[in-house]
Image (cartoon, rainbow, N blue to C red; front, top):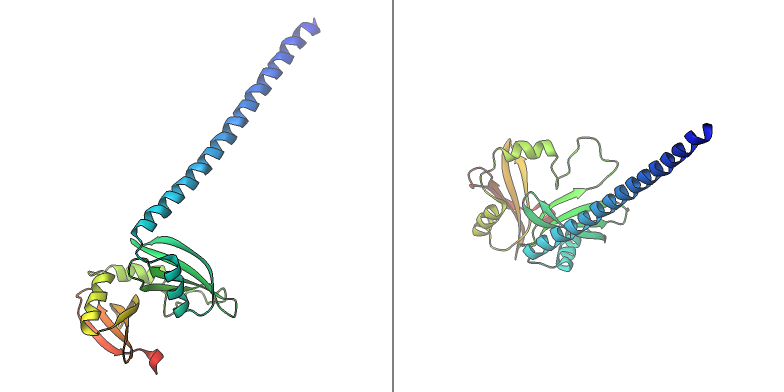
Length: 206
């Protein structure tokens, strides 16, 4: 009597094992397919960004190394708030890393992030702005970086080497650095009205 029940139980066990094995294979295949789809998607995104770039990766690297002395540690295209940029990671002589964002169309450095591990919490360097500051600045920005750059070049003839947005006396301004025949000039433009607030020699010239 016990043998009669043993045979169906054994058969059920074999069938059950087959179902579990098939399910495992299906899940593994699905995970592999998802990973492959993600890789294709990343490649497509890079191709789309590359199509919008007007300067080469090598040119972006050279520009980044002019602003931060060191060795290039990796470069990739990114979408930075709607602007296609080359993100160039530079390692200096002290081993510290900086992420230099270079506009892929104009060659202008739009941001330099210092990846200092020892930086005090909440501290913001001259070349970067924390997320909270960005949010408050965005509320009072009515002109684009490209428009601010054009305004600056009408004021001072030369080549734009850096363009950032910052707070100056509670006003949001674009700080545009222009390389002229007589040195660097910093042009500050009201981000809300487009009015030139100040033109002064860049501190690096002193």
